[in-house]
Length: 569
Image (cartoon, rainbow, N blue to C red; front, side, top):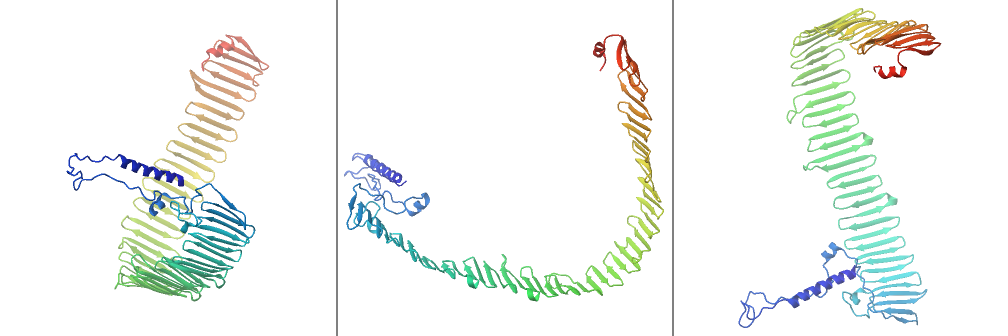
């Protein structure tokens, strides 16, 4: 890649010099030239381009943009002649390259030897790169960007530009612009950065790090965490506290002390403050103040001076509860409950209950409910009335229904639509605009629904009829299945079988007195069999056939093949 860039820059320089050589100079007689042959002021003369002193030089911004595989080290030797010496150690040189070797005591490799003159971008005075190894235990390197000293395995020193690292046994020290680290394995680790730093002491359970945006510290059970302006700290598991700032610039905080069952939370933006100390709960909101001593005492009061309403609710369990607001009042004791709103008035006692709603449009009276004996409910808006003498009778009536119920008889009516009557223990009679039914559970079922009918006398008689079929079963002797779409019938009565169906030209039917005799007839002829063909006869038009000992013999008419060819399908 380096050779490609060199050729590219040489081509650019050659192109610029060619343009300079062929640039047209103005003649003395050209219009606008002065008598002395010089162009007048303001007129551009002979263009000239000066080639760059270093065609390969590029700016740092350009190098970051296009990248480069050049690592700053000098190029390979420019001459082919190799020089060698063998005393007092082996040495070879070629241009700026040099190797000295006296194994196993000494080894040296040098690039950019100072005795070689500078070539191109390379400056021998500043680009010398020397690596040496002494006695297989000490390694040394010196260059413009990198330095190394390694006394294996005791000490290590490295430099890369302005970044220095020193490692001696378990101790490490690093220095760089705006940075430093000091480590003593495995006891302590500390360091700093331009925007923060860290400190870790594992044996003391101490860990700390921070930067401009966040910080965290842990010292045994104590911890502190910061993210922006949000801070959380505590001593686990005894104490926890946190503070934060919302986007609106208001504060939020919380405090928890688990051993004391203490909790406190506060939000400046919402105007909410909550404190829990054992059974005591205190809370302030913009609308209400709350004070509770669980599980016995509870109190809520409004704050009309802020944005709340004038209200108060107090409970002393299990003795009483009393509350009021601009729209309702409520009083509850073990003996009674009273509730009043602009439209509702309710009183409940173990022996009597009275309630009205919708400004008296509805009214409920109950003798009970501890022992519910009698109740009456009335809704004047919809003309609904219900009463009950439990468990003896119940009645409900309105313009749409009329229902009665007793332990022995019940009747439910949707006016003009349906009626259901129940008689103890299991007789149900239903009528509607679509049909009716009578059921005596679990033996008798009879009814009709639109075009369907059914009759069941379990487990003997089953009859179902619809516009397409009719099924009758009188088990176990009689079975009849009729399909009204093709007028087909299949009937079994004892040991007789009858089947018929509609065909072209008439009806095809057959009767079997099993197993003795069978007879059938269709529009083309008839047939009969004794003992399933021990003897029998069949006629179809001019064709006839006789069976003797189950063997058929044609007695008249065309052959069976011809009959099959002309027989209608």
